[in-house]
Length: 163
View 1 (tube, rainbow, N blue to C red):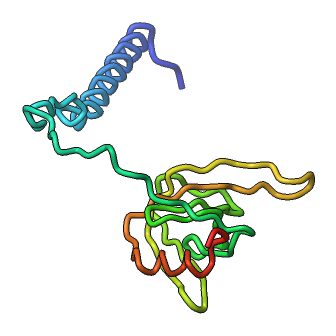
View 2: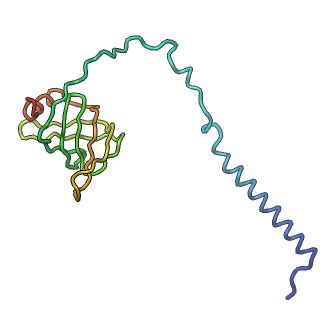
View 3: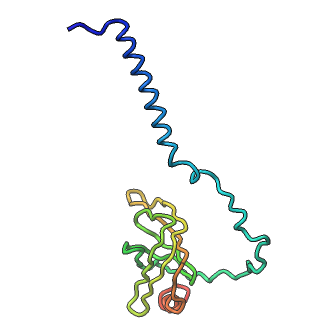
């Protein structure tokens, strides 16, 4: 069986190249079709108030933090942790595995007399080296989003080192 003649072969190569270019152009159109308006910047300035609110009180006294020495066992989303300090607005805990910053968690303050459950956002975490050959530990800060003030105060009164 003989190969295509010279002019027929060059015509087929030209058609193949034209088809490849057309396919590429159609793929680009298809790719750009769904990317139109939603990928463009939107001016949200019209949604902002004309004058900033003047009732913001920035002189609030920070909540009193209560220390737990030695740290007391707690649970952060069913994982064991230790509580370092606690206030009605948040807590500092030490986790055994790296916590996911930004996640909403449930902090269970374990106690036979004054158990308490709080919900909060993990605001920060860092990795700390412990003694040589021991695993890392991860101090983390939680800002409460839902909390029972009376239960927190009862837990602090019963378990905090400074009480």
